[in-house]
Length: 371
Image (cartoon, rainbow, N blue to C red):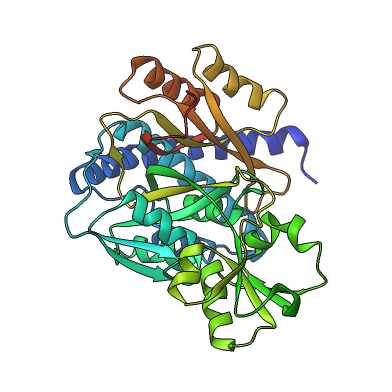
């Protein structure tokens, strides 16, 4: 067995070579950033990254290191994107909704997503998808210009799947909308004939108080409006759905009980996404993701960067980092505009204090900032 000092010397030699190669790689990353500025291409290409990881793992002589190498390259690409973001900075297109644009949403007509869409956009084509993942892929594959999705609810909290997909596909937030959610029990006959209820899981969670009064079976559906549509097809007074007044009208069903949500202030925040970043002239809200070192005071140090400048933090949400047990990333919303020197200086310092910083968007929020 070799002496520990001999082993350390060999590691030092390898590390020197790694530093040289890292510097060489980051020089190329700078050129990639310049190319993306010129061509208006997004920072992240999930298909390319997955292919690169698979190809490099296949080069190993000993596949027992496969998982570790995969995590290593995921981190390396994350750092590269963060560096590219710092180079690209505010070089985003001026906010302007395209003429004859197409907007994709999850659900069907009459869903709360379709209602939110109609409040944010006018004179656009719409495309509906069954799942959140399909909605993101439609935007990523340029089948649509924009997407609108729910991301959090005032009663039940974050919609974690949307948070995770937002980072996976590197979509940019260009606006948000807060929609008051009113749930109604919808069906064909009187309430006392109902035996089973269909709804999205959020509909069940947000109406738990009302539902607890009845011994009904609950069947989860992909969307509240889809559940109303399904109850219409059953044509049976034993089945009801939880959905919007618009869905009841659309599918010609009765509202058996109005406003069954637990809280009258029940509100869902929807985000509007684009594949490319935009800068709104009146931007007042910034969303970003921070990955931090797994060490004491790591979160405190980045929050102090925000607090010492007197910038109001609107939200912080932690999410686990895939492939890293008990390690977390933080989604943060703050007030401000990147055109403000204080804010841009803050972002620059965050790059120094965090492992990586991903800017999700700087946009105008009509009612998502403090008054």
